[in-house]
Every structure is written in C-alpha cells, then in structure tokens.
Image 1: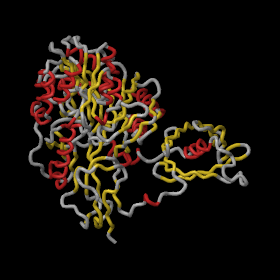
Image 2: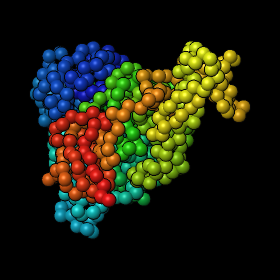
Image 3: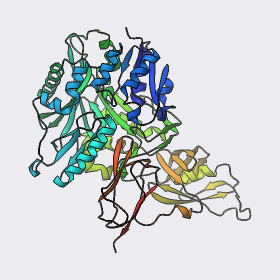
Image 4: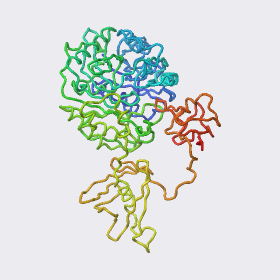
Length: 614
C-alpha cells in the first residue's frame, strides 16, 4: 500500500495531486526549483526537496535528481503529473529501479507512444517525408512532449526550414528532446479526445469524449465533456480506436488518445501516456477522481467491468497570465488577489501574493463548471470567470468570457481555427468607461476637500490613467457637499468602494490599488504621474522586449547597419517555455542591435532600433 507520494512536477498539477493524497491519508513530497522556493506546491506539501537551479533542464527535467529526492524524503511512490518527465520512459524505469512505485503506465508503453512518429506507425500511419507544394499546409510537431510546444504551421515552403529550426529549439528546451516531424495540417477540424483508464487485470475503460478545439498556439484553452454534436457511430468508433491503442501497448493507468475530427472522419493524432490538463471535466461528468484511480491501479486493484455512467456536461477554461491582444505574450508580476465565486471547481498553483515568473508555463488556474446541460455549464463558467477577482498581471480572462459567449461556441460549431478567425474581435478593448472616475474618487477619499488650494475650493481635480492602452483623463471636484463629477451622481465613495448612479442606474465599483496598478471591478488601470518622465522616451522604430525572458537567437548575420524588411524576424525571446519572434516593425536600416543570445532582459528593455526608409 502506498503511504507517501513524491510528485515530480510543480504548480497546479502538483497541488491537485496533493489534494487527493491528503484525502487518502497519503503523505506528500514536493520538489521545487530555486525559482519555486516560495511556490504554493512547495508550501502545501508535507515535505519538500530543493532542486538547485531554475532552468527546467537542471531541475524538473533531471530524473536522477528527482529519484534521489524521493529516496531522501522516504517516499515510496512517484507521480509524474503532466509535462516535464511524465512521458519519459527512462525516468519511469529509474523510479522502478530505485524500488519505488511508479504511478503511471509501464515504461514500454510510454516508449511505444511517447514518440509521435512511432505511435503513428503503430496505428498504421506515417509522417511526411519530403514536403512539396502539394502537401501544404503542414504541421511541424515535436516527437516528444505536448502542450503545443515545438509546433508550427507552415503554409509556404520557404518557411519550412525556419519552422523546423525554431520547433526543434523549443522542443529541446521544454522536453529535453529536439526531434520533430512533419504531418499534414487539417484545416477547420475539431480536436476530440478519449480518456482511457486501464488496470493490470486486462480491463480498459473509455471514459467518454472531450472536445478541445479552442486552442492558441496549438495549446488548449477551453475543453469540455462530452464532445458536443458527435454521432453515436462516431463516438463508438473513437472509443474503439482508443481502447485498441491502449491494448496494443498493454497500457496501464490513465491516458488520452487524441483525434482530429473532420465531418464524420476521425484522424489519429497521438496517445498521451499521462494525465491530461483537462482531466477534471471527465471527473465531473463521470463522478470520478482520476488521481485516486491512478493510485488504486498502481496498487494493483482491479477496475469494475464497466465505467460509471456519464451525467451532465462539464467545461474547463484555462486561465493564463498572458495578453491575447499582443500575440499571447506571457505576463509576469505579483498576483495580488485571486478569488472565484462558489459553485465552480478551481485548480491552481497560485494564491494571493505569489509571484508569476518567467521560467514556467503561464497558466494560473483551471476553472471547471458542471451542470445538467451544456448550455447551463457554459453560462455558469462564463459568469464565474466574469465575477472572479483577479488583481495582478494581464490575463486572458476577458477572452475566455467572450469565447464562451460567442455564437459559434454556444452552438457548438467551433473548430481549431476559432481564434484564427475571431481573435481580433474577441480582444477588442471594452473597458468600463466609468472605471477611471471610480479609481480617482477612491484615491480622493479622505483627502481635504480643499486640497492645496484653500482659496479655490471648487477647482477641478485631474487624474490620468492608462486603460486598455489609451490615456484617459478624469475630473472631479471637492465641494462642501462632498465629491462631484459631471454626468454622474456619486452615491458613495471610499478607498475600496465607489457607488455611482448614471441615468438612474446605480452601480458598485470595487477598487483596489497596488502602487500605480489599479483594479476597478474587472478593469485594470495604470495611474500616470502628474509630470511624465522624459527618460522613458524611445526613438521611433525601437523594439522593446514585450516580456521578461532570454534572448535565445538572433537572425543569422544580423548586425547594425543591415537592411531589413517589415515583418522580417530579427530575434527570438524565450519566456515561460515558449519562444516568441520579434520582427522588424518597418522596412529600413537596423541602426542598433542591443540583444545577444543568452542575454536576460526585462519587459520594456531596448532590443534593437530600425530606422524606416524615407
């Protein structure tokens, strides 16, 4: 019987596994990098072991170090979570060789399916060899790992070499394996998958279907179960293929078989030999704890002959610290306050006051809603996201709410091209126009109504903010009767709550300030100083780092004085396990190049300057 589990992972999934372990009376052991010294997963575990360093390659991807940590902490089992070493057969063998229980599939099954090229061969498929114009578009894909890393869509042959190079670099950084392959890219397909669970006694469950079509950069954003709109025949075919794949490799434990569905045709993508990020929607629909089932299977217990019956519908949304309007740029900083309404499930690795850094995936949390019908689950999740308190870096919260309420999603007509078609509309700024005034009134609370101008008590007070990238100026007055502003009636104003009445409608504005960062309900503002700092000005054509990260590559032969074309890639930054391309904003001359490979840069750092041709 398992008494102590080390989770060879971090963040949200480590916290989620610890939760089940606590319910089962199992001791928990965390591992943490130097960057994660104060992370939630390291704080909530019964025991934690430091992995010196910050880079994934030196910490969470070092299997020998993690096995030593498990032995030193007295753990008798290891759970890999997802990502990192979760699909590494060598790590699974090292765990078993150390006399520990491996809460996952046999190394041989991982080996057979971990390489997507070998998995396709096993299913009677093969990747493309020499790519021709007739094969386009194609998808460059990492042979190991997942999560959208090491993937690139190629629509023009001249882009193939660059896509291969960047995909290899990203895959090597994320998974320790730079192997990639090329396969046809199916436009407008749906990403549908089947959760499987198998024991050591020959039973394999197919636990319904999930639709994961809403994706950015080939990484899932919204997932649901069951996949809507599938015929009974297609659902049966997907279940049959998933079970066949599991039996082909003598699979044990939890896994997922993924397909691209176009019409009534199912195209096998891959088998993930691990727990998926989106496993909570299956748990909600089938009333299961998949982590608990993994532990039971690892202990040798048999599954029932048939799985539980599915009930209702569940939807999960991944909340990321990123800005969808700026090419999904990851965001860093302090998560000052984070709370969600009751009635939805929250899986997270963060809590109030935690720092969001640059080293790992920018996912903050997963919110899951379960209801009797799909429409009810969609409404429940959208409402919870809208009312969530999120004070800190920019997130994709507004995008998620709009996505869930988009007609194409509510009518289940979405596919993997959803964001390609709708991202511009979904990220159109729609801040609350009264938020700046509420912020100014909250800031004015408690001040003398005469301020510094005692002989001019009614002189307008002016505050300036940046809201949705636009500078906003608001005015209000201190009067003998209190605060006044044009066009509204100020019902109440204190440092935390402002109540305004506009055209007979009263609204509450909750205000929280963290230095220059102000949050008014769901609107984020930046307070501007009264007099701008002239030292922050940059020359036209300046390329500034959109996020903190590491310069991993500069375009070959690029030097100051070179002629560049608008849109030409100049350098690449790596942040939160993803590479981000920085391109020339205009056609002209590269007058300055400050970035060098390996350089750590902060957000706003000057990387290069391009002078536009006149």
